[in-house]
Structures are given as structure tokens and as C-alpha cells.
Image (cartoon, rainbow, N blue to C red; front, top):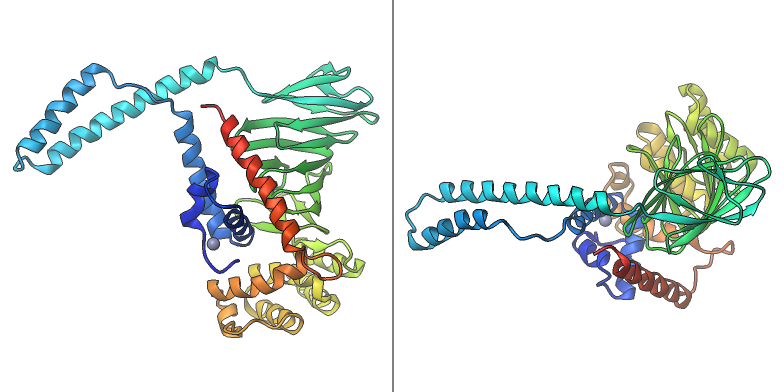
Length: 393
Ligand SMILES: [Zn+2]
């Protein structure tokens, strides 16, 4: 499932045109492949821009300039190509500018989207207003809870978020292809049933990107955060660092550093302490000693942590991590030590295909039955199509 890049299928995926089996493979590949994820984001952005630009007719004056040009081009093959090209380019720029103008006017007239907020306990506030039973959170507005209040937010039609006591949350974006909250303090739990990468939560030290999942996210007063995933996958990411976190695992993030390495919640406390040093200690000697401790205490399931460390390490550390990984899960045929150390993409995909079921299976190491997975993705794809239908036309 990880063998082939999926860049050619991105547009079809975004428009709900893939079969459910194909969509499932697409989503799983996206989880494993940073390269395709980047491409996916780019294509999504393009689609978003295209959808926001309303169709409009070009002014007659413009056509009166273009039409003779086109006629002349067909009539006379000797006309220099570049002259024709530059005039059409100028016309295209004019069209684009006119389109953007109309887009801004159109955007100004549309009311801001907002999400339903239900009071669960106490007196949560939206802005400075206390909400009694229900309220609405518009883009840019803050929802705040004190020591005794809690609230639930409906995330458009794709899930919900419970905001715990002493928390501050803002709605940043609500569009068919992107829903985004900001959590600056406190704790929230999210249950999302959308296709991957539709729901995001910004924290002061990283962004949590949803891959169809349930999780809790906590932000402390220093701006650090702790993510715990209970189902599916979540990515914790900054511009240059990312950790993929499966169900049963957690990931800590720190301001100025970003996400640390994902670890399973049932890993030994000493393993987790050592990992925090590997991820965040400023002293290289301390990090080095801590890595030895991580390697010594790792269990087969902790290959999740070792793999992510391996992917971001170099030199002697990279070799040590490779050797430990290979003792737990021997690389499949065709994957060599030398190839892995130099970061061969195909070998990385092949080995990951063997490792990933160990991380996402239940605690007995068994995989989720295929039937269950298929049913899950069928529901997901149905929702994706519905979301698309609901998108502003
Ligand atoms: Zn790929």
C-alpha cells in the first residue's frame, strides 16, 4: 500500500472520484509519505482558489480585442508567434485582475460562517458574552472557559470538540476543505470523521493535522503541548518537523523546537523520560546518553519511536537506530542497510509497509480486520462527497 506515490490521484481524491478501496490506499499512503502530503496540500490550495473565483463574462471590449487577434492568427501563419502570445497573456492578466476584484466584492457580501457551541457546564463565554444553553462561534471569535465551565463545539458537519475547563479556543477557518481552530491554553478532545487533513488545530508550538481520528490536545502556560491519540492518526507538525502519531500514542511539543517523537502510552516511564531528553535537551552529550537509554529499553512496539528518530537522525546515531530496528523487525527482501542509511525512498516505503501494521494493530499485534477498515473508509468517502456537495458553489 505504500509502494506507489499517489500524486497523480490527488485531484480525483479531492473530488471524490476514486473507488473506496482506492481512496483508502490513497489516505494510507498520505499518512506515510511526506512528499505526497506536500503535493496534496499544494493541489488542495489550487482547487480552493479555483472554487472561490466565480465564473464571469469578459467585458465586450476585451473580446473585441482578442477576437481579431485569433482570426489573424489562423489566417496568417507568418505572424510572429511571440506577438500573439504576449497579447493573449496581457488579456489573461486583465481577466484575472477583474476576477479577483469580483471575488473580493462577493466575499465581502457573504456572512461569516459560524459553529454551534453547546454549554456543558458552568458559564463558557464567546467573546465577552456568557452563553446560556447554545451559542455560535464565528470566525475570529474566542471561546473561553473558566475553572468550572466546559463547552462542546460542532465542527461544521465533520465532528465535534469538547473544550475543558480553563481553556481558550478561537475559530480560525471554516471552509469545505479546511476547518481550523486555535488552542492557546487548556485542553480539548476532538472526534473527527472527515477525510485526512480537513481539520487542524493550531497551538503555540505546532499544528495538529487530523487523519480521521479521536484525540486530546493540551496546551500548557509555556506554550508546550501534549497530544494523545485514541483512534486513527494525527500529525503534529511545524514547517520543518513532523511526527505521525497513531492511536495509543502521544507526542509532546515545545515552543521553539516543535514536535518531539511519538511514543506509545504504555512505553516504560524510563523510556519516555529518556526520549524527552533526546527530543528537547539542549546539551548534545545528554542527548547522546539518553539515546543509548532509549535503545536499551525499547520494545518491538517502540519501533514507532525508533523509526521516527531514525528518519531525522544522521551519522553514528542513524546507524545505531537502524541496527536496533533491524533486530526487532528485519527489513524485507531488497531493503539493505546501506540503502536505508542513505535514505533510499523505495526501501523506506517497503520497510514501513511491514512496520506500520505493528503500530496500528491492537495491543495483541493483530491488524484491524479488512472488512472493518473497508466499512470505515466507505463511510469516510461518503462524507467526503457530501462535504463537497455542500461546498459553496
Ligand atoms: Zn508518496
